[in-house]
Length: 475
Image (cartoon, rainbow, N blue to C red; front, side):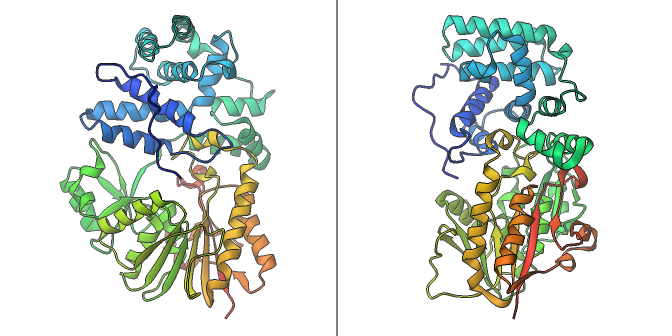
């Protein structure tokens, strides 16, 4: 992912300090501008939110919370909002001016989901925003008219009938693209598809991973309590805590600044354990990103070993270096390279363990990154599968005989998961599936199926949707 580009100079800002709704609208429009379907991936929504909050540290905790609620809520419920707008506007949604559409989405979200904001106030604020963004008078009037229509009837708007229009009903009511609704109805049946879509609309828990290189889980729990933060141990990960309530920025907490923890979903923590790292081993990680799994491996090995962390993004590797420094870990060597091509490793080494944190559609983390549902297209699954196969082929020769290769994704699509692994195994008979249940704590062994694949599902487990396959190379 590229660094977040600066906003165009032509963007008009009000002369006074912008309101929370103005900032939320700017985040929403920026995300749409930087994430055109079919183009290169832009920043995640939470990165745009974090940048805005960093630029405005004076925002009060309630305003910071409202900003997150508005920006995330609009993109989570965009499908439902667009349906409502389509019923209230004279024009089809796809014909509306992009800024007008995003402004109406923001208005509709407040009317539909935030009962503490009076309808008249929501419409009045939308008109003020239209003027602040210097829309022509005709478009300001259009925003006012559609806003008033929405305010009068958005809660009484009939939705598509699940019996006669099952795909449209799921797509609208649960706010997912039509192609994804159709796919899940075919794969999971009506009940399963609705459960998955509804799980994707829940808020993700605030899960952190304890830096066990410096502190135990129970000690960190006590430290956080002293900082006014209540937590409880995760259900499955032995290294995780769930934050139960937070009324301030977590990055200002002394425990964070001391490197005692970092944010990481519980399923991602479990996936790393599947590699069963041992002290003194040489490891290769492909797709290291910002270092979540990298630093987990390092803390398990106690700094005794070597991890070559490969990623093709300078920005992500820069973030990884900062994380390694903050956590006080050693043995990690970031390498800028594209793992689809040849790796810049001279002389050609071999590794005890290899982790491929594969690029994927992210369909397993839609509750954490709700905006991804609008970014993805049906053809993306095959595109990612080709990249994943190329990575597997690239690293297979540098794994030592008897070594372990862990393939990990955060998607629920079989084309990117077991189908990729099965195609690889068919071409490489020296590899075989290595059931990894014993690498997990007893409470998490249920996530390994009869074939030996690790899988977590939001609707079943309350975790992000992860897939992993451990492959062993014959000695």
